Length: 238
Image (cartoon, rainbow, N blue to C red; front, side):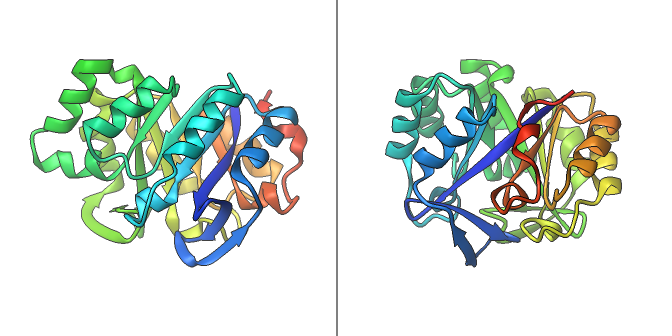
């Protein structure tokens, strides 16, 4: 199982939020320095999220471009990727996996036009679909809008159009109070594809539990930054 550090970028800073609320941000410095530091400490993959793009208040494409120029480590990039032009840009940067969120969820009611387009161009293996859940329902647009789509239903509908899923339990995200294994288990049961779990993970014990449940990977954020999770777990977790 892969243990992957989160590098969330807002206003040019590496930040962590509570429940996706920008008002709760805590900065940890320059995102490039932070990300390269995690690689030096054993991370095999970087999970990079452009929060400015996700919230429609800007973008950090140049930062991601610099990241790519400084490391060959795999990069999973998401945040505000809502048209093919943005997908094209990230493909040309040799981003390893592109994380689709809002557009993928909205595509459920549009005969999957966008997903079919990008999968035809680049193959489904290029894409992870982010299914972010609040109270059991999918949220979009930087977690600011709640849909009427149940999490498990979204996963079953979207399976044909991605390599795997990133599931985030928004209700516990950034609180360092622990993940809800039962919610993640429901997601794992809903899909035969790889699932990366995120949200509230605060200890190595939880990482052990998610590995036992069959998660392909976990994203670790605030608990890693605050020293609650040991750096030694980064990378390939055995």
